[in-house]
Each structure stands twice: as C-alpha cells, then as structure tokens.
Length: 209
Image (cartoon, rainbow, N blue to C red):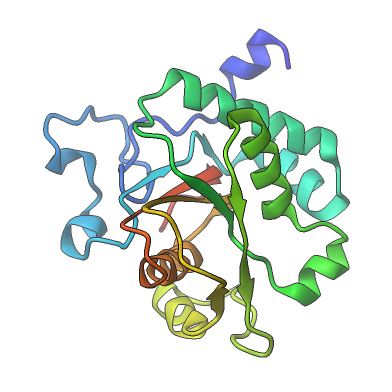
C-alpha cells in the first residue's frame, strides 16, 4: 500500500478504550473522558479494545475480499495494519494468549475460511504468542444479522465453550466489531474459565448508531 492510500484510510482515532466506539474529534482529558457513555453506564467484561480502523470505504472492501472471497492477500494487509498499530500505539501489556472469536460453523464452511482463526494465527506468529481455541455450541443461537445489541447478547448466551483453564490475560481476535455483543459474551466466558483480564483486538470497528 502506498503512503498516500495509507494516509487516507479511515483510522479510528479518539476511540473509547473499552469498546473502541469512535468518540469524534475531541481529545480525552481524563480517564473518564476516554470512555463512551455506554461503557460508563455499564462497564463491559473487556478491559480494553483495540480497533485501529473504521469499517468504511477501502477497509470494508478489504474485509469483504478476505472474509467472503478467501483473499489472503487482503488478510495479510489487515494483519500488517494491525501490527503497525501494535507498534505505534500504547497497547499496554502483551497478553498471555490469543483466542480467535469462533465463527458459526455452517457459515465458516460456506465461506471456506475460518477468518478470525486465520487472523489470530498470523498475529500469533508475528508476536510469538500462543493460540487457544474457543468453540461454538451447535444449534445454539440464530444468525446475528439484523438483531439489536441486547437481542444479540440474549441470542449468544451459552454459545461458547472453552476447553481448559485460561491464563490471566487473554486477547480476543476478530475482523470486525459491530455491536460488540459477540465479543462481550465470549469475554464473559473467558473470565468464567479463569482469565482476569480480557482485551479485544479487532481489525476494524463499525460505529454504533
């Protein structure tokens, strides 16, 4: 990617540190100012969320090519952009393990690529971190598309299974975060499995309307 195209990507500056929801152009002046209203009112299970890009324009096209056309070149570009964020931004302590947000088995087979697992393995290789796997229970939950955040959370209850205890610090990896319901439910499951801190690492964030 040339420098001009890189510069014009929709970067997610000034985002909530707990859910990566864009906060507009204002600069935070305190720890409370780094949070969106929803995270202040109801703190999520996540300690932090890192989403360097907005799901818009060229980023949306990259994600679509990677996710629905198994275009690994587009996937490598997303990983490179996120790795750049890890180097340039104050991400904080590195996690003990990376864990992919598991896709619905039927839809993953239809696409021919377990996209979050692929991204997780690429990042794990770059950072020399181990990977653990979560599974979705078969027959639990309907498709999430079109549901509100609260409906998505209800729909996802009991959806995830983690085999074995987790270390203290886990980072969940996915391509796009929309309402955050899937990651929130998986973060709760991680804490039940022994994690004390759960972060989210996602390539792009869709602003919540």
